[in-house]
Each structure stands twice: as structure tokens, then as C-alpha cells.
Image (cartoon, rainbow, N blue to C red):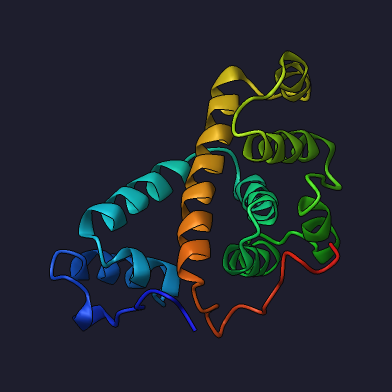
Length: 183
């Protein structure tokens, strides 16, 4: 059971309710993550702004692969479950690739460079080497895209941390994937 309240839309602060309505309009559901963030209208607004900006970066498969890798690094079962579902069902990543993403790898060579770099950024809290940056650039990513990878890592670190703090109940639509299980 979640350690923080997961408010229903009408129980959330009034300033958060239209933001939750926007999430519902876009997704058709309001996942528990957004409902917990709704306790702070400023935090929810900030998250939604970051999600919106990041949705314009890289392609959806790469973003989901990064989310899976970062959730694994941070031990976030909620985000690992959500992004494995989104990645395999909506972004059309294969289950085999999703399993590789958990290890900072991919069946796609270019994606593997981004996912591996993102996992290192998360593990090392940004203290990557010159060789790490050179490798992702050699794989075909521009410096702007390196910035975008870091922004996507940051979004996922924020959601991972709140879900770990809250021990957020995994939504019923998401099959449970545990970071402790063998990847």
C-alpha cells in the first residue's frame, strides 16, 4: 500500500484538478504517479512541463528504452512496470529489447549507445567520462541530443524517486515488473 495518499481527482487541490483532467484527456486514465504529484500543484505542473518538453526529444522508442534503464538503475518497480508496458505495447519495443534495456543495452546499435549512456548518467549521477560522451556521439548523437538524453534521465529520476519514496501502488493496467528480479 502506498505510503503517500493517492488522491482521487476531486480530492486533489483545486489547482491540480485541471492538470489531472489534461492527463486524462491525453492518456484516457490518470496513473497513480500523477495523482500523487497532484498533492502539489507546482510539482505536478513542473512534471507535466518536463514531460511535454521531453516528448519532443528523440523518438518514443529511445525515450522508453531510457526510462526502462533508469528505472532499473534506481530500483523503481512502479516506473519499470509502467515503462515496460508503454514500451512494449505502445512504442513496440520487443520484450527481449526491454529486458536488454534494463541492463543499459539494446538490440538496436544506436539505441544501445543512448541507453547505455543514460544508465551511466543515472548510476554515476552525471559524472560520466570523456570516453562515455565520445561513444554516444560516435554512435550518431549530436551534442543537442546528449543534452536531451540527460533531460530524459532527469525526468525519470524525479518520477523514480517520488515513486520510491511513496512506494506507489502499481496501476492495475501495468503488469508488475520488479527491479530485483533477474533482468
